[in-house]
Length: 480
Ligand code: NAD
Ligand code: UGA
View 1 (cartoon, rainbow, N blue to C red):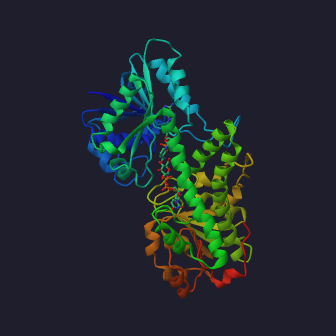
View 2 (view 1 turned 180 degrees about the vertical axis):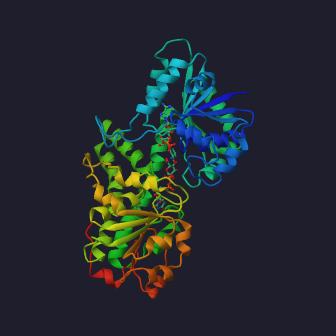
């Protein structure tokens, strides 16, 4: 039985390996992690991440050919193929702080592989890394000079959270980059043979290492750029009376543009778009390409602008003060169908409202209260100015309650902000919500989930991203 070991049991390592184990029963797949509580959760009935259909896949193969363990060195030493799926966040201090990828976890894992290995291995980069990282990992792996031979491959992951299992079962493509030597190409073929168990041959593409590494960064940058483009357009729609959903529909019918990823929102979140673009920006700067770096920076600047614009709109619409007012936040995850909150626009908006002394109650169907409190208390580095954001005061944190029911969260509120596109928000009884709120009752829809016409009929003052402004708001321009 060929043995695979994946280092890192997170959002990528867990689901990816579960699908490989499901589709390749003849392989033994072990996922290892330094975080014992995460491994315990993978071995329990309550998996550490929420992802539709993940439970079924894990149940089908856990204990058969899928294992989760903290015995890292043993499983690494035994495996023939190693996947590296550790986190690669943005550096928060030192050279390149706020932009460069922090490869600390990555390098530690690589050094450990070099130290414990006594048989030849294929090492697969699954994490998203700066272009040319394969060269660095080759150097680390070979520093021991103990005769063990390594082939490093780049096999970036393109899954999206919320649809991870579907994306893994039916990928649009699998990308494998390797060295253009006979040994490198043999390793590429070995990995290709694994995917070929369920992915059609023409969807498995092979390239050189650097193209594979860079394609991942480029893919995320292009996707984020689309969201920032439509979000930039949303501001102009509001200023002119155009409707961003109509504009998106009209331009999306052009096959050269296409209809996907044109939903205007309060701003993109998630652990990767911002991090990967910043990483791209840093690589451009290091390669003396400041104009290219500035081009990509603008995608994040527009995203920051969109979040700020939404927050300011809430405040300015309510007579320029939310102090002491109750505001209900519907949705805390960075998108629907996940409990992940990393870089969620909800954190930015909630923290902004707390700084303005609002009292907020938050409802999200999947995110835990501990996670919400943690996110609100954690301060991020401002990537553009490289200064830590202002800390939240303990008093501000006391102004937050987390509710398990949207009607409870909105009861007595002056305003509701919809910040995640959970399907259930489309079907809420907005008349009931309106009846329970203070008047005038404001609805700020950051995801274009509600029908503004119907809600205005109920009595709400409605702000909906990129849609013609409510007459109430016309007199109250928001400064972003
Ligand atoms: P994550 O934080 O959920 O998981 C990473 C795991 O690696 C953690 O559990 C951590 O404890 C573990 N780890 C760190 N150092 C380790 C070490 N030395 N040995 C063993 N375990 C170690 O991160 P993630 O969201 O799974 O992302 C992983 C990588 O995949 C990142 O580079 C990310 O950019 C990329 N990626 C993420 C997604 C996504 O949707 N989350 C999609 C595609 C690519
Ligand atoms: C994204 C990419 O879609 C994946 O291909 C990639 O593998 C992954 O990043 C990664 O490298 O981590 P993910 O962040 O899970 O996946 O989710 P997306 O569906 O891309 O959404 C990202 C953010 O953009 C969310 O906040 C979402 O609400 C927002 N978004 C997306 C919009 O505001 N409008 C859209 O039209 C689409």
